[in-house]
Image 1 (tube, rainbow, N blue to C red):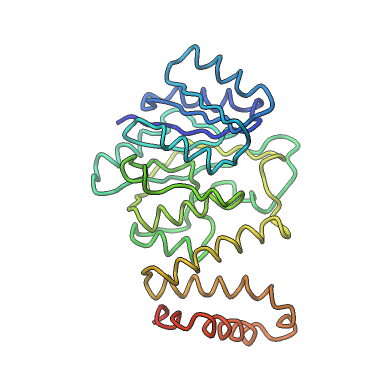
Image 2 (image 1 turned 60 degrees about the vertical axis):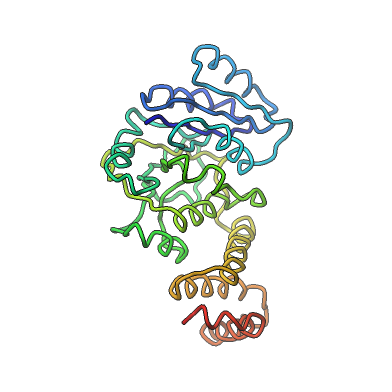
Length: 298
């Protein structure tokens, strides 16, 4: 089983060489699809030089910066291998990254993908952010395959990263793509889609093989509007999906509760009212506007 690794990159000249070479050392990698998302630095030249040395490297240069969602989607469509994996241009793999996951996929043909832990690698002079305070990023405790979507939409933290996924190409190609309307938060939205529609299994990796590089240029501050707006947009999107598609009552309650929590901040006068009372008022507004939501909750 061979893997297509999709790498979106924008102005990644400082890291792209390391990222690609970390894929080249993997025996299971059949191709590395680099989508240059309108870089203005020497990223394209670096990838072209590496491509001259190894035919597994495929470079697609876009005419402007569209965002990582579109870049990844193009990479998915260009992929030719049986499996697909994602890697960001500033992250990298360690040797034998795919061994456990592929063995798991061979052992359980009924599953569509695997996930595993990643480890944060902090660069020198990194400015601290709460978003990256967890050194190892993974689920807490055992979560059944059928409960992964519930776990994520409840906003449990930490969970797994998109760069830890190995997915069967036939399960996502032409079916599950990144939302190009999201500039931030598209990775979480994609995990929601994947865990809702596919069966993923923990690859049970004991020795971490994926490193996420943390530096001052790639971490969004966890404070204020930078994080609030994308997450509110994410919940608004999934609330709209809830109104038209089938969810379990438990899943509906999770989404409605999170919708209430974000909508609370839109009603300034409710800040002076107690927490439970204010949440009840927002729930009343939601039910008045969307009366069918009551049926979803029961």
